[in-house]
Length: 303
Image 1 (tube, helix red, strand yellow):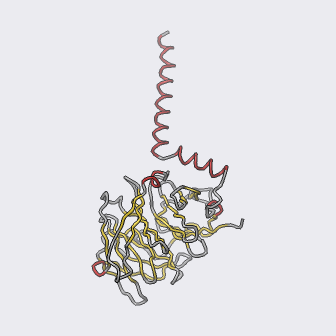
Image 2 (cartoon, one colour):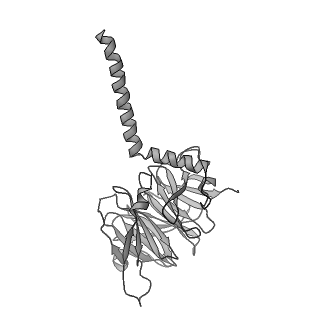
Image 3 (tube, one colour):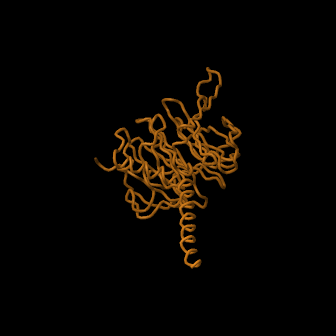
């Protein structure tokens, strides 16, 4: 009799353990928040969203030929009508065509661990040094043979130093002169840097760093790999590799819409393996790079 009584107790214990593990996993991976968000956006899509759900892949997993090192980050240069990315081993700044082909390679000296690059003005870019949390503003002309960090304007923030979980993404608001800086995780944060880069020599050099913990707490992704600021809407796009998601935030930091990078969504035949950078051109086309050096393009379908 005791043997038969033990069976329900064992089953109950196993059931409680499984429920506990599912609850921990759900909390760790933010599955409950993501599920609730998906339900809300399906039931009542945000009218002010840029329409990420209508984007479809038009170039999928095209290998970027000619690279031995993995690339990280992506930014669109409207003057050159091209894209830029960086490598952190044997550091280089690399210009890509809008079809994902290499146009130019510029060696980087003294950058340590470059992880992100962002266009901030004609011939002007900011590159991050992830481990040292440095922001390095460089200028690139048609005949620049290499870029040396010691010759560049620099800003070191040194906030919550955490090895290789440092500054992973950049985005720039041209009108508001704000540089958004993403800390990958532990904790996952987005800083707003005002006053860097410094463009007006007649004004004193003053840097102000803003942190919005309320906004960051709404991010139900596991990490941050890259950022993109949309000048037309004022919205911020946050790319998460681990969550395989692009999340759109409005001007208050509220999540509005998302673009899934998983197989079967947005026309993808396979999941994006390790998304590292996102950029948007003037027409609203989205470009994405993923390790191992794969190139993607997404365009919005007609309403």
